[in-house]
Length: 601
Image 1 (tube, rainbow, N blue to C red):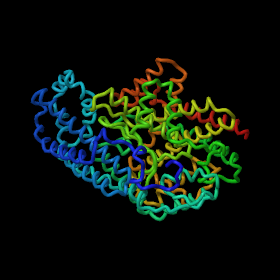
Image 2 (cartoon, helix red, strand yellow):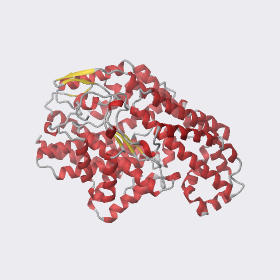
Image 3 (cartoon, rainbow, N blue to C red):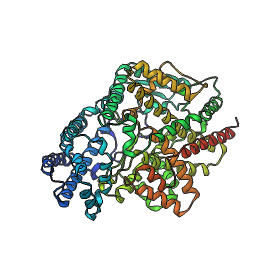
């Protein structure tokens, strides 16, 4: 499968290459039965209304019912979502998810009274309840609800917002269907034969050694976006308008403030990231100069930035070989971590390869009741696929530890923390392979990959974060988000981040229109803060002893029991200061200098 250039239909994917969703539901019939139970449960919600303050027992009963119905909702949602991502063109899967949303939207609306009623309870009553051991599973959740009090609306208003949940997904859902299913990117002729062009194969084609293949694939790919630019631009603008609407109705100072509030992350953390990275762009520009010289090019083009700098770096790793490699690299984390991850990677957590209609990219989907599932589009001829596998494995192991160490109501950690566990694994994988490299050529290959991965996670994601900040500022200032203005803003960022070495195509700024994370605003900055934290923590763990490793596991087990800045302090890093980002930029500079030495340039 990994070596085959043809993209199979979902029905032709081997069972062993698919994830096993039976821990969520062992059949579609079981999911349907679960949906009926969920709908029946929804009819009982109103019976708890007005009872919370009558006694501690009544309060606890309502909280337990809410927890149990929420847990069923998560199981239903996760299963339906994962089945839909298998093939986004499959009508049954899309229908299943739609039916879940049709059930969940009114049920969530029925719960609209819960948070306002909790916040209306007397502090004395709530304090006594939270001191009661029977409420221990709900203590963190209740604390966070009370913190949201200034941003919670009346019961009627909360119900209206809840009923809007399904509709608000329209921009992201439409974007996903358009770019993964409806747009036909065609194929590209290569010396090895005709290759299909898709969201997933684009990355592989950008690493093709033939520059003309890369050029044609790049131009053809973005020509497809150019043909739909106004539609996608309107979807982006619609998503941003929803962000602003939600922030206004909840009395936040803007969409960014609203997005950062749940994690208790100060906006200064975001600004520290952008400011520190911008202060170090000369290092990034120096790397692009090195890349141009290493590739012996007169000028660098956007389709040249993903090609491995060392030709010998191209090597095949089967999925099974990648599993062995990752597990060996993560041995410093101990037997439990490694044996659990190995079993997950080989026995049901992972949907391994691309098929027609499958969502592009990769993700980990942890849940309390099911396994921490992983979607991959694994390519045996792309080294980054091995690192992606380690990355998603880090997410899944974080979920595994969190779900086993916390009650349901506070097991779910934030994305801010998640990107630490994932990139931490990448750091260890690099160290393992680099220390065992047999030649300067092999070391240069690995280091070049490391530099490119750090660039993609630290510098590129910060550039995306700047774009989100700027476009939302435009909207807040009353400036319409038209496709031309969006492209103009993005081109400014491209030119600033890539520097004078780069020559862009007319369609290069359409890259802004293909980033799915923009439909979850102010999310991508967490990749950059995450890698900064993981670099600091991995250096601490590998350079330390039992205490440092135990501190890291304490962080993994903390789940959602702490706010992320505090959770990371447990692991030994303080993200409220610019220091971790500065250190990450310094390490990037050192890696570029070492790469230049190895390449003798």
